[in-house]
Image (cartoon, rainbow, N blue to C red):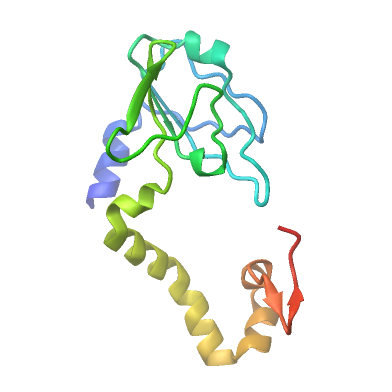
Length: 153
């Protein structure tokens, strides 16, 4: 069993993932940690955790707002820096550093290339037109084509 599997297995009893569908999600009052990662392409991240919800969390609990690049998804979030990455608001520690992958640039690059490699191979093996026709995900990622903007965002 690899490290990610061991980590997932050891945390399974203590963690819960909750999807918000872009509406408020209430962190449990007993929450020690809450991670927000909300993205609506081309728009500001929707606010899914209000100040009142933050007040209900345990003192010294932790919020990690990974949506801070898009404005944040927690009402009490504000951008921080790598030099001063945290602040306390409503008794809860907030970590709101934009561009978190920048901390681990080499690892982020490897992760990006691992995700992009199948598309690179498809483009190289089939050519642009056939690759776009064959793969709906690649088509959705197309921003411009023959000088035309393909997406609204």
